[in-house]
Amino acid sequence: MCQLLGMNSHLPASLTLSFTGFSQRGGCTDHHEDGWGIAFFESSCTSPGKGIRHFVDKASAATSPIAQMLKSYPIKSHNVVAHVRKATIGQVALENCHPFVRELWGLNWVFAHNGDLKNYAPKLHGSFHPVGTTDSELAFCWLMQELAKSHANVPSVAELSCTLRDLVPRIAKHGTFNFLLSNGQALWAHATTKLHYVQRGHPFRQVHLKDEDISVNLAELNCPQDRQVIVVTEPLTTDESWVPMAVGELNVFVDGALCNNSMRVEVCGL
Image (cartoon, rainbow, N blue to C red; front, side, top):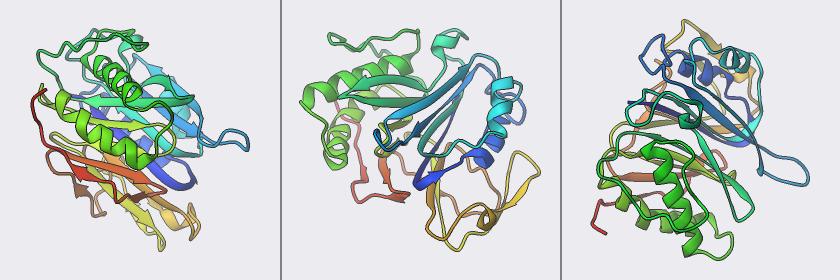
């Protein structure tokens, strides 16, 4: 299956270190070599959190020149979603690379999925339709469609979390549905099997990557006001206390911290 990586940060932060280790799983330290992608939400004075830089490649993340560039090009962001793919449903093609992007309520939404959905064929009757052939993009389109039906205008993060709590089990009952979702305001993470997170804040410490022989003192890269949460399928470092998410757990991260709106969802029928 695929692997996921996400970040939610209090201040704009770079994911260069985490992406350096994570990209090795795309064909070097692991077999997820059927494409990769990453999306960074960026802020400006006129559009806080609305703009995105979106990169995808059907080459493996371990060998892609685009991935190599991003390892040395620090893009500052509040929210990041990344993915390395092991193709199970849908051929190896650019249109099947995660994360996927759609617009809703004037906001960019970014989604990446790890898992397989069996006998999943929802009715799509709105503005959201897949471009590629993955079950993941189909699930994303259905989520966007149902969110649009549930809210006329941009709801709060708390309201969105409650709506997702009702919608997610209707997909998760079809199989493995680990995912990351962001609209630039928050990062939602749902676990069916494996998903871990770690919160980093002052005082920052030295960390060592699991997939590369690299150690970095985070205190040299962050100020005391910085605070980030990193979410990933398997822990990226060997010397941090990663928290495993429980089966059915839906977490929302805001401003670099776990939000009170996090919850457990139960897989139920339609």
